[in-house]
Image (cartoon, rainbow, N blue to C red; front, side, top):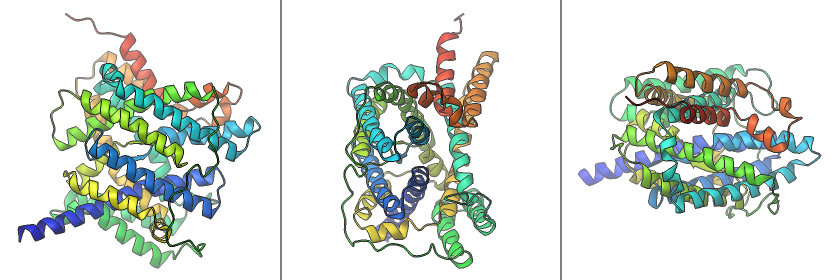
Length: 431
């Protein structure tokens, strides 16, 4: 009886992790595809490569890297870089394809930096920089940055849509409140599988009320993810500073995710050095894989902590099974096409629900020690300038050099950088 219960529990937890991995991965290829004006076939290929690289990255980290059940997904900072470089590339007289080739190279170079930081334990040396105030501010800015994307998705503002899609929005908010309500007020399996139940109900309701996605192009039954799908990577010396700074900021993402998940799992918080070093090294490998397979670079996502807190799923085994399943699925384009037909408003609603827990983790980190005048000022300056930058159109930086454009237009990078700078420059005198 116990083995049967274990099998059923493993199956359900694996499937829910799998659905969460899909829901977290499916939105970004659509967003990037619309920015770079990719057609349906190109977006489907990007979706396939995203599933593959997400599965590989998550599995490598769980087995050999930080060894925690942390979902590796398209990084918010990279989505920002893709968005900004799309504009700066065209302004410089380039093409979208040429920019994508440059981005392949940028991800590979960033991966080299990250691997070196991890392999030579440099990450561990700069670990003291990432205090609870830094990680908490990072979480807050991350929720601001990505919640805007998720809300647009929930309102149906994707592709050519420029006004709120009423039916889609209502179904998205229904899904959001189902997930949030079940995880908060339900007990037993209803609470544990809230994300899965919410997405299934939302998907079925969407198909009944709104209908299908229209005709889709025929795809082959089996196909391996394509290498350098946008062409050979275009290396340029100007990408080295961008890659270096992105690698440093990515370490803050790695640290924040490890801290958040260890907190959620109830693990000891004394030392994160080993997890951070190995996590950074394998994040470098994963960046290289993303560059080779022309995807969006993946990093450990703090939303994993939100998912674990939301569902109560703390075991690593189902997570590993889910990553393997995602890798296998990526080789079967018809299945990818079916799964990617999860309506974007429904997927975004489920992700938004998991962000509620992430906001709690952010506040917990920021207030881990009493907020005195110094800390309030640091958080206030970093939060205001970081968030304000997110509302500026990228065009306002068009007169600056390409490197400055890519840095100055990234609110997450600006805010995190400011809190690190202020904390290091404004030291507290020891009594």
